[in-house]
Length: 233
Image (cartoon, rainbow, N blue to C red; front, side):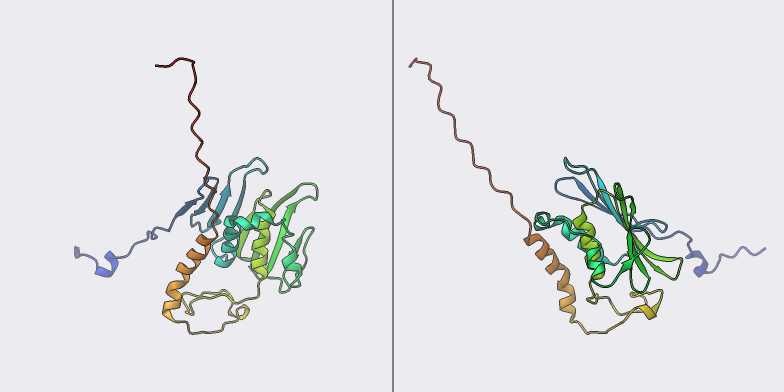
């Protein structure tokens, strides 16, 4: 019987997957929670918001392959104080403007039939929004979901970003830029200085922080006048 130890390459083999990242971000007022919990069979990003006097609790969730620009459009709009002043617009309008056509009872489909947006429910009781991107008939690439009480301005921010024809920046590499179908992606290579790449995140953080509103300082209450009791010492 051979009792020799196995080769080093076999001792290093492991069937356990490396731990996945998990992120929890809470708004300063504790009403909104952004959670990243990687799940191979479900949504990765979930934005939950507590109920308010004028709106029940709502949520938005995004699959793992949802482009980060679309998620950022929602979170930027949520945290922008100026966005609450404008009236909510129709989430379908940005898609109609670029030629999306009617789909099922209440939805739109892209000209290439690869993406569709629909709201499940009835005219009297509209339900949740679903944005789905597929390849072929059954291969789902990613899906975004918005609960029925999600503010319309957030759904519109998502569809507006989805309709934006501007190219997105990605690292040009076979490993860092995977695609299920190279024929549906148009690539254009541009050299970017490393210093610009390193400063992009810092510039974005400063831009978002600069728009935060500072609450007005409450004046200090004046001291009450002394109580007169008619006696002196």
